[in-house]
Length: 191
Image (cartoon, rainbow, N blue to C red; front, side, top):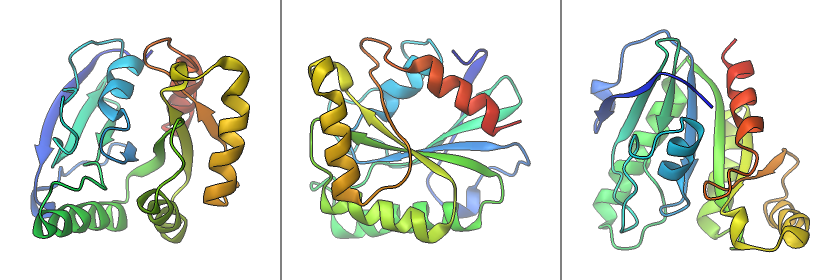
């Protein structure tokens, strides 16, 4: 678990981006993929990141300070259909500008729901991350929702549909599957 983590700020416009030299670990994924639950689980806090009842709630870049050493950065979810086209464009521009311009990103965790085949939006995000040349790991969330014996089959399907060569880690907030592996990786990435 990551200790001494607190919410620091939300950014709705790139011009207001946090001015810091601290390393950053970034979370990206579709709306409703479980980014807030992921943050709450790896920090062992129930309400650090707000878990929305409706997808598409997070419209800002949220910075969580970890022990005053680095940041967990939660990007807005993509692919939520009830947003207007203008809102989607604004959020896409915010994400693109942040990832393209930030010099402090050490690693990105790209979250996908293990139960669902990667969507067109997921494939676009995967290609986009490849083109940005930023190191990333794919995390397959909600692994507790499928049988243990089927997890590898689902991981293979995700790998095949994304044409992914990167590591894919099954994860569950509910059953704490691979929490220690994720936390160890984060600590190593920010060294």
